[in-house]
Length: 391
Image 1: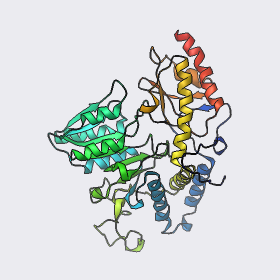
Image 2: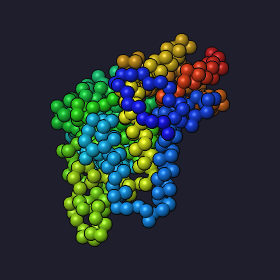
Image 3: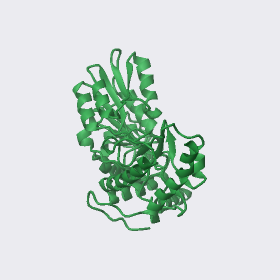
Image 4: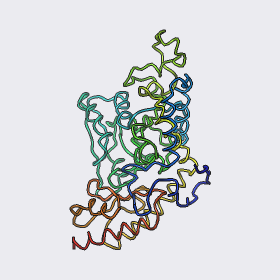
């Protein structure tokens, strides 16, 4: 296992492929789909499985120590407090918590993006249908989603449920401006940061979301079926989705669990999922978060931004369009074909060991620190016959 090296802000990070199990002939440019696991993360999972294999060695503190550590690590990534973080299984779970606890009534509206990820759409549709509120869907022909969202917010806006960048093409939102506007209208901000947390800097002290969730398996470089939910202190006395034992006050004393208590542990813990201790996934998440913090999110963003800028420039030279760097997240690139996505594109590229995604009308290219110049060359070599056939 390589030692963690803390870097200064805005430092370009050298290639980190050696930390991953990526063959040289595989160009995996698809972190927005699912991050590959680092060797250190895999080994942490193995240790966790071995721990569960010998349950007589597990003690009461083992149920709470790693979750507390993970809360603190994620809190550092978003500039929050550890006590404001709940452990959840998915972003959809976090958004369901938000929808249960943010007030909404007839005559009000919820602002969403067109082509937003479903996990941050379905709970708001259900809430609007239940209360008689309206869904306002925002798009922007010129790509400036921030301006479009700001124009949609008015005195009827109770909630703006948004990402930091759109999952189909990386279109960027200025969440500080939007947060100010929503709160100025008397509303609240609910964020799904699954496509940005860990790769795009964010400061919750400035953005001030009411709720913000992120799955762990993409840019947080961790396992599937684990994530984090930030809850603003104003909303930490709300209604959880579950009524388990571990979030209750005094739950660390197993011998007294039959002394049932209505009160919860302080902070956001009332929103924890059941079995949040998760003895193999939690160590994996910790290992991944520690490495992200050692690299520095600002440094990750700087390095990935340079990579996608190079890819975008080469793409323009062969007729593929993308949003300007000013209007997209640096770690994210959505490429558009003039005549639409060619049939069989992903199968053709996979045949050359090149892996990207198609989402909406974009070919989504999302590299990370394991990608090399050779990976980019492989992508464009694989695109040549596709473009020739479409000509």
